[in-house]
Structures are given as C-alpha cells and as structure tokens.
Image 1 (cartoon, one colour):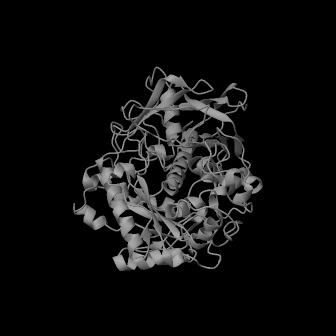
Image 2: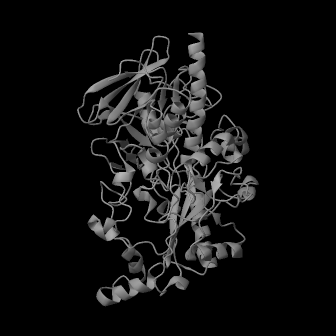
Image 3: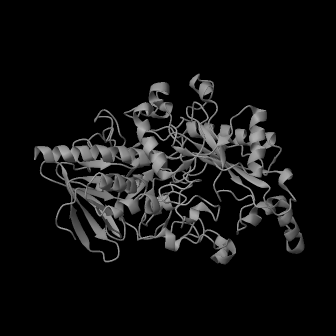
Length: 569
C-alpha cells in the first residue's frame, strides 16, 4: 500500500464517492478511492442485447439476485451471507447493498428529481422532523452541475413541488408511450398534473456518451453509457486525470484520528485475503452508502470519541428515513388484443409521472398526513419474463396450454402498475445501532435496525392507494384487485425502496446534528459524510440526484479547506 498520504481518501464509489472522485481530481487533488466490492466494467459486462428467455429461470429473482439474473447489481442484494444485520423485535428493515465499483448507481431506477425549498425547510412549515441547514436557492447551483454532468431528461412545468431547471440542464424527454397517454388523459379528467419524468438517461449525445436507443432495460447497466452510472460517467474522467488510485475489495471499518482530533487515515480489510491495511490521507470522505457510513462512524471508537466519531450529540444512528411505497395494478381494456408493435421507449423506466399535487391543501392542514408522495408508472409491452404470466393469472388463474397462450396475446401490454413514492417524517426513534453480538465475516461489528412506519406514513399510503385507483378509473382502466382496508397491508417494508438515508444528519447546531452543512463531522475538520447519511429529511423524491449535488458541494468545500491548510502549514 502507498505510504505517502493522499490528499483525500474517499470511501465508496457510487453516487457520492464517484462524484467526489470526479470533482476533487478535476480540482487537482490526489485521491484514493476505496470500494468494498469488486471491479466492474459495464461496457464489457452489461448484457444489453440478451433476452429474458436466455437467462436462468427466465430472469426471475433469486435470493442472491433479487431483481433477476440481468440486474446491474452483479454482487449484492438484501441478504449477504457474509454481512448479516439484525432488526429490533417486531420490526422489519430491508438493507440492500451493492458490492461492486459504482455501488447502487449500477442498479437504481434513475428517477432524478430536485428537492424543492419546502423539502429542505419542512420543519419550519409543519414542525416535524428537522430542517436542512440551507435553502433550495443556496443549494440549486449544485443541482445544475449535477444535471449537466449526469444527463437528465425532463421538462420544466412551473409546479410548486418540482423546481424548474435553468436552460441547458435538462435534455428533451422521449414521447409518452400508448398506456402513458391514457394516464395523461385520466389526469386531465381529474384535474391533476401528469408530466414528463426526470430520468438520468440522455436522449442527446453528451460528453462522448451516446444517446439512448432503447436497447434493453436500464437496470442491466448500459454499455453505451446512455444512462448514468458512476463507473461510466464519473470515474473515467477522474481516472484520466492521473490523480485517482482505486482499490477494490477494501472494506473500511474505522477512521483513524490524529492526537489533535483530525482525521489522518482509515483502516480497512481486504475482503479476499482478510488482511488488514492502513491508508493515510489529509482528509477522509465517507460515501459508502448511508447505513455503511454510519456503521464506520460507530466503529471508529477512541478515548476522544468513546461512542464513535460524531456520537457526542446522541444523534448518530438516529433519524433513519425510508420511502413509503405501495402499488396498485390497473388493467386497461383499450390495450387488449392489439397487434404486435414496438412501444419500448427507455426500457423499464417511466416517461411520465404524477407529481404531488396537493401541497396547498396539505400546508393548509386539510389532509390527515404531513408529507406528500408522487406516483410512478410502469407497464406497456415490455419484454416478457417469468413474471409476465403473474398478471394473466389474476384475470384467469386456471388457464393453461392453448388457452393460456391466447390470453397472453390478448392481455400482453394491458397492465399498468401505479407506484407510490412518499416522504417519511423523520423521528429520532427510528434508529440503527451496533449489534454487540454480531460481526461480519471480517470481524467487523454489524448493525441492528429499529425502523417503523408511523400513522403519518400509513395515512399517506391509504390516500395514495385511493388516488391511484382514481387514476386507473379516470384513464378507463379497471382495478386488478380490491384495495386492502388496512394500509399496513399495502405499504412496503422500510428499506424496500432502497432509498434509506439519515443517521448522521447535517445541521447548523452541533447539539442537534452530526455534521455541518457541508457534511463535515462536528469536531473533526477534515472528515466529511457525503452520502445520504447526512440527510435530515428525505422528501417524496428519489435521493440520488440530491446525493450527487451534496457530494459535489462538499468536495468543493473540502478542496478550499485543503488549500487553506497548506497555506497555513
């Protein structure tokens, strides 16, 4: 291992770590990127043109590949035998990990929505949770940088829940598919907005990347670099700078502090050889994914920080946030019995979505829950897989043989899934701690989750279920099955949406937060938390774009800090 200290050690290579590597190397810093998983080359390993029928089990999910054989997560999932975690009695939490270069950017649904000012300042509006330590206006320049680099298609709609982007940030969206046009018409009948989705997929060439030509599902990864993945967008220019060193299979478990309290390196174990290593650096950035970064802070114990770095306020590990989600399936007779036609579009990703439309009513206190949701739509004539017949069986469960084939041709493409994606209210009681009885395969203490939905999320889900059913009816569809009377039967388990954030929240007061507004841990001037762990709230929007923007802002701040440090040395 290198003995000369790097300028910056970055832990994790996904949305946060990949962004920090790109920004810092472009600013002249010498960076070492540590990734717990294996090396991954999307251009070589992505099976873009293979069919579901060529995959084992017709691409059905398995415990080691929960999203199917072709999913971009080549090494990961909710259950990793070598990396167990526990949950408090009576609770369920699903923790998805992607042990590969680029982390979960290889898998994510690529919905890329900006948070609005009311998302950053929700506590000031309703007294629940915590505010972010800055406003949307202060943060917006880094959204601009992120959108231009990532490549996001979408439109400006001038709606209160969707901040507009400046010219040059968004690329043109693809046209709506046939079933999406039905939903747009249904939205008009209801007086509710249905607009172009914002997706991290380019429709025009960008920085040497090819525009999407609708080849295969985006969750497989993208060999032509049309969709956003850290290994295809952020890491190549960082590598080309000559200032990036990447070490894979490096499981970081502790940040090392100097006698003055500053970070001076990290300890990690090689996951293949089980050998322990030490790496020195002038600064450390944790972007290992929210819960993993919190675990590293907890396990970084010393006389100065007996409960772990950042634990002095008592808030480390508290305020874990997830995304309330539920689904409602609609069957659309207008789409039945049609001749074969190509309606793929950006495969497996929605071209449109339904943003939260009741913000004024919510702010006026006319709704029984405090935070909103948006609705994503999935359907159309996507490539058949092992799951395709599940839909037909709902209509005619006893079909087989010739009749099953006839029904498959009739119903193919006529089912649409409406999916709630909501905001969870932050509560300190939702927490993660170190489980003293459990260690992973490398001897590192693991986590125990205690995360529960409250009445806020359950009432929100009940409302979302009814709203999605109303959309189906207004669009001319039929509910596939009745709505459950108890929203607890509809809402997904915490963590299931793979949007977990929080645990090391940013704030303006060290007594009420773990980091400052740049993700810098209070009392450790050169240790930054740059991933979703720093989020004080989660909004109803998918967090990845905000993680990228937050990491970018933190990286620029760190570079200024390092320059000042050299100036005063």
